Amino acid sequence: MNTQKKASPWAWIPSLYFAQGLPYVAVMTISVIMYKRLGISNTDIALYTSWLYLPWVIKPFWSPFIDLLKTKRWWVVTMQMLVGAGLAGIAFTIPAPHFFQITLAIFWLVAFSSATHDIAADGFYMLALDTHDQAMYVGIRSTFYRIATIAGQGLLVILAGLLESNTGLTPLSIEVKAGPQYAHEITLPSTDYVSDGRNDKMHFVASPAVLEIGTMANPAHVDSITAWVKQQNIANGFASPGTISATQSSTAAQEKRLNRFESFIKETFGESRKQSRHQLTGNIGVVKVCLSQQPEPGEKVILNTAHKAGDPSIFLSQGDRIEFTADNWDKPAYIAIQADPKLKESSSASFESTSGNITLAWSITFFVLAGFFIAICLYHKYILPKPASDRAVCEATASNIFKEFFATFTSFFRKKQVAIAILFMLLYRLPEAQLVKLITPFLLDPKELGGLGLTTGQVGLVYGTIGILGLTIGGIIGGIVAAKGGLKKWLWPMAWSISLTCATFVYLSYYQPDNLLIINLCVFIEQFGYGFGFTAYMLYLIYFSDGEHKTAHYAICTAFMALGMMLPGMAAGWLQELIGYKHFFYWVMICCIATIAVCAFIKISPDYGLRASSKKGGEIETK
Image (cartoon, rainbow, N blue to C red; front, side, top):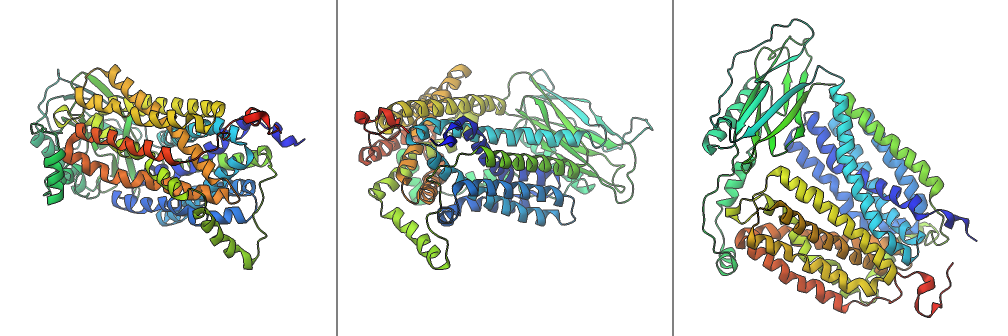
């Protein structure tokens, strides 16, 4: 008997997929936050970190090597060690003079190692589990991947923030209250330097201590205040000149002329809605910040401000990063805080400004992350099973590696029903690929533009909490029922689930309800349906990849999966702007025909996903 089977899948699947999600978040999200805190410009952050996604896009091109060389288990453990080493390298080089270039290069290595780890982990999952357990745990692996993204964006950033707060001057707290009872007029603070008269250690002085913002706003006045704050901070050397604002670029985009094809679509299929001008501008308040003492020559005291608690509908508009030096310390800096234009009730929020050793804080954060990966590597080296089927496809010699490499791609496109399979990968999620891009804008846009007019905080609850809960529960239940009845039995219920639940957004766009309970319920149903229906999609990718080169073939399948989400999503916003939300959601429902149609042509073994002892006739012995 193989003693390796004593290791429960629960002992390694959650940790394996948690480890798969964490480096992706570190590369794609945490890097952006870190560079922002370290003073890199938005232009450079957007340009260079966007390229870090490339390894996940092109990973199918080197996936055959994972099949040809070594075992999947070896690749998983080795890549985790390399990711840990790379994260430690980032931690070491953050304090270096040219840290941006060096850390970017290491992030590239981490990205390639992480993408390779994804290939190996997915391949190992297919080798270490039988088809029944693959179906059973497909929702669990997705759940722990999502938990990794939440932990990465939440806990690690919180850790960095705590380290920043405890390594510098006393943090500055800014309390903000917003509501219709407060004055709507905006009062600018003076441009005079103000000190509180204390001569003790260096500290910050803020006025007012409590900022009150009315919920009514004159858009032109708000824009002028925003421009004034930005100009003052730049003139006094607290901030660098920025680029065109999001509001300006959005306005420019709206005013572009439509070509003939776009005009035809808009006139033929667009909503007949009264065009009332909506000013998407919330009221604003300004806080003046001064430093009590002069820094040493060459020393920088950097004040970073972020939302700490309360309603996220009250947000930071200007002054998130301010640099005090020996030359500008006796001048006031300004922080602008704005309220969501749809906020009509009384609300409050608190912001915290910290001036800690940001370099040290982020170095420690990445050391912690590196330590976790080295620990998880050692854990998986011990706990991962050693399935007999996990072996190199061929003997690694110079003469046969490239031959097998091209044979891997050739064998994929020679599989039975390959054309239908590719259509399934591209079209099964066609409705959701378009819907997912417009859910948040639809929830945020005002009712006169066809949306629901929710505030930022409400959207965080509806989509960021209730939606994720529905998605996770749907995925877990999908895995359980597929393991009990098999993929073939549950394919049609899952296809209808991922299709029909889109109708909730037709309902929301038609009635535009104010009741948050109804909105939450509709979003939960749609996301539950997507999570439940997505199980069939993932299982089919595993089913179609089965064979000699299953690891490489699964990576190719995921490339088509990404393409199926990317292409429709690119056109979704353009189409919605032409025809409006209501007709856009009608179009999404029409696209459900494609989902149902591709399901009618694919062929799946009735036994796939079932436990061996329960397969037809009980002919296959349980091992």
